[in-house]
Length: 305
Image (cartoon, rainbow, N blue to C red; front, top):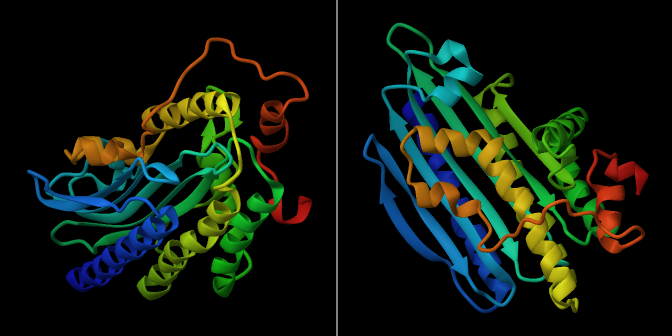
């Protein structure tokens, strides 16, 4: 049974990677994604696709991987201690887009499937995923669109999923050491297995399929907005937060490194350029201050705006 489950999920994931790369390369209008296939020494592999120095995207990465092994990594057993002693299969698509223009937000999405087994016991499986938005100079209409697409994608599965996954996203992408959210959130879920395989798989697909509907309209709206050195410097400073989160808090980064995945592929979410500034404080009343004041905290975006 687990082979059939993995085959269904992997067929969807490779097609999702194809569709997202095609659509984003078309939106960029300058470059296409270059692919590197890789093999993991302990079992499995993947294909990493990177677009660099495009017209719209400074760097974007869309990775697909399917890795497996005889021993669970420490990050997984810390999260789920009952999985110790099981072998595992993990597959997923993960992406991060870093645009040139500071008025286009950075975006991230991920969908994944995990199954762990040992002889004489039922398999343990679950889905996870989500997408989140990290603006530098945010527009309320963009944030509302992002969350409306998220809510609409989950509506067929009941009224409780969007509020639950939205709150989960706010909690997960909270930078504890900065006391702020990474951005304006979206969806995050993990350990999804309580509705049977078919419905859980459908929920994961709904999230994966909604990413382009949420992000492409924002890219089109903002890609020609004029900007200068001030906006660029602030964008690079805020990108530093992205690096901090991924290296300090992100479970996916830890899982990839601990399972011996391909380091370049695991870290392709990093921005090509970022900066840090000691003791930075935005000027009161400035657009930069507005980001901190109005956007870097959990809010009910669909009803407050």
